[in-house]
Length: 463
Image (cartoon, rainbow, N blue to C red; front, side, top):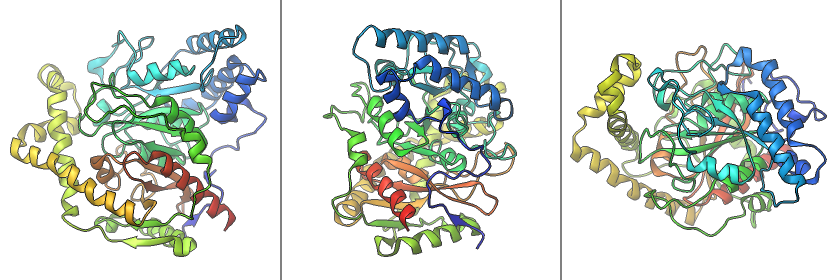
């Protein structure tokens, strides 16, 4: 058998072993607890992460902007605040990387484009404001593809630099996977969180759209854009999500919601063993043979806890609807860059904008009208039978080279619907590179989805 399912969760592949006595190997959950208890200082932890950057980033190139002195200054301020006896937040002193399309008032946000070189926003994005209120240290900005939808960036896969880390959140996924930082923010408009997480062998959550505010994030598509979260453990994903969730009255899908204890929910045992629906989608033939074999093995090991599901209705058109909406909206959102600097845009991005400018309004409006109809069908599926849907995160392991960040075909449907989707690092290909399993849950079922993912990992470890 060429593919294998990993019982232990995150696949080590070719990454160096993480020494538990080394501070940079701490999870965000453990680091936050130790800082809160005074067992370690934030400055120590951030310094250990920066040392890891110096050790590894020359071959990975995950960072678009990093000022070590500024990161350490934030950490020292966090330590002084704790010693003063003031209340502290759940991420106090914990460093986090931020994708370079999310505004930060104290460092540049250049959106992966020479057209925005030197751009420094006047205020933080809403989600960065949330993180600072939780006590996080904003360590630096990570590489993104051009405007999160164009040409690839410089970042390489930490498991093997000859391969892509995925995109568009390439730097965020690679920095977490390489142990340079425990947490990172990305985004997803197609497959830009789930796919890089799969390629880099970490957890990547695309939350329910509207749950995490997007104000201050470079806009690709107002309909599809979602802030993404990266971590090396499910517990850390839950910790980060709790600090990112907020109501933003300016967001069309945001609504006031009671506080959800995602960490506690994730740690709970499911009331009954979950049932998973295995969804191949109409694009299963694009999954490479190695990955198909890995999924067959996974389904066999899960036994009666998983059932294959055929998606009904006009589901095959969903990918066309996603593409039409994304292209039409990126053409509007990058109209200024198109008018003033199109010669400096990549051929890939120019093609997207040109197609978007050609889409007719009736076709665009019809595509938008399909989203609630699709969600009605999925809501019924979750309510009647399945705790989560199991499907590939990508068509296989990371592609060689940096010309392509991979195929987002197994993410587009879930992004279109705005449902939560999580890449779980359970498998690897014949070449040892990671291969993620994607779990999809109902809208606003993010906590339940994380709980199901933890159950899945624990079940496979015991098998």
